[in-house]
Length: 259
Image 1 (tube, helix red, strand yellow):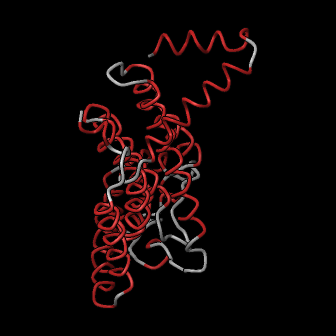
Image 2 (cartoon, helix red, strand yellow):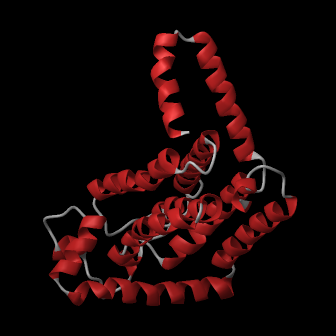
Image 3 (cartoon, rainbow, N blue to C red):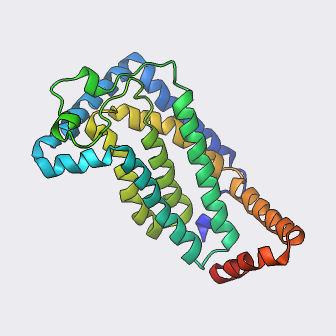
């Protein structure tokens, strides 16, 4: 299977292309002619998606619920479902490869969110809900739900970074059937804040791309996944040799069951 070769060897061309594309997309956000274009497109996008909140109370409640802290936590649990299904049920691949995929994806998400939160801390970017009118405010439309509808540091979109890494990782490295399960989860996580007015389209697309492209390149165009497989094999050997058999026996049985 071709995707099983991803992350097993150096691919300098893909590395350079991915980092170069991320830089170009980032420059388009600050270069005046294209930055104005991004602002115009993002403004139109805001009026379309936020304007949809006038469709009715049920629609408003759905989007208010998806923008609450509880929804963020539940979305994380839902995102774990395709991951667990892949690790425990896909017998077509070695268990260490399945675990390596999930570990590399998890590391990429953590690194992406860290840089999204800290690299642009000094850059002020007010969300569309703070600068555009008319604005359908979910905190007024559905006051009984604590929805997030604004941000004074909207760039980049953290949720878009997570959703992008998650969705593209499944699409590129794991397979189509898992991707179609992960896609609606990723889309919901990536677009909820935009509908509420807390992010511009450029926050999602540009902010997402400058994090997602380099991290996926490091995961797929280097031997990162093969290194992770080797690490997991070595760790398993060390634990088996150094821990009492009474502790390791249940894990050995579990591994045999899902391998």
